[in-house]
Length: 162
Length: 162
DNA sequence: CGTATCTTGACTAATAAGGTCAGGAAACTT
DNA sequence: AAGTTTCCTGACCTTATTAGTCAAGATACG
Image (cartoon, rainbow over all chains, first blue to last red; front, top):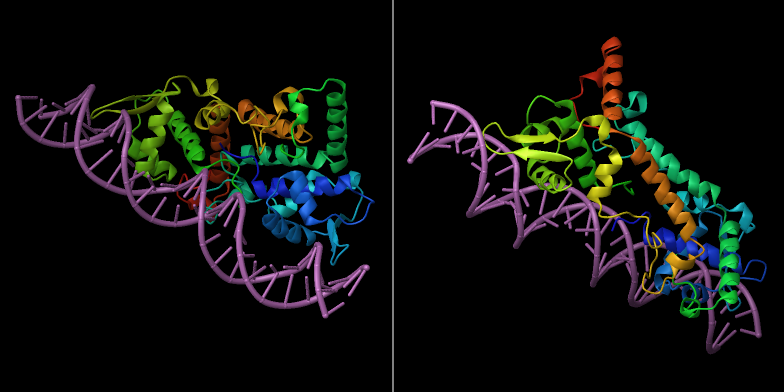
């Protein structure tokens, strides 16, 4: 099935989400994030390292080291993460043009370009409107629900679902 | 770069678009569509054949054969094509869930699921709102513009741009 | 010093996308 | 009826992208 966004980006998002959970309580280790969010640790190393270059997260080495957010969760949007992870914008020059060289899209568009642009913007809009804090709130709300009426689902290990 | 939708789907859309251009003038041959829309002919065979199973298009064999639409272009949406091309919906069960087995998404959701669902719906909405006729109208409008102020871009072979 | 952590780039494996081929079946033309 | 032109079908191949691993190094703490 066509994925909305590559796993790598999902991992990045979930890692930031996990960091947000620990916000204010010192650095969080890769190994912990990997565990909590069910991400292959070695792969996560690569991702977090890349993500560091965005400035959204920072790190500290050594025994008490780990990663942490540089801003509060309500000042980070999903869009910040997604945009960084997939180079600059899917929006420009005729999003899905097959032959960018000959496509005069940016000046005049082609029959399809306006639709692709609307799609791109629609996706971006959702990402930009969603902050990490929103996700934390979702999470909290769901946990409360589960506490009220526990089921088999509530036993499931954390971090399985993106 | 991450593609919004695979080329196969883009080809399908462009093929239907091309058929719409010839609507009412008898079947259009694969070879013509392939040519007009710059799609590899052999690949297009596969795509059109699949698309036939959606009922959106039909075919006729033999010397005067080819493909044609079964409804008028304003009764076909891009969503019809996209939905058919990529199996049933990207929306259900936690669109991007990593571990569908353990994910209780459909009943309770996870912190991320509501966002993924909003993304899916946003995409689908654009697709569903756009008819093939809309694309034809775009195309017509752009051609008129070009006729008024011809540039190098206007010389470009047709069908390069999705 | 020793251990635990991040850092980095190069490497490999798996999967999906993109595309091709050959042989057959229908339908028209003459 | 013969021949040609088209669609039909499934199996096949190739390439690009995604996913993931590894090893050696650098930093920091105790």
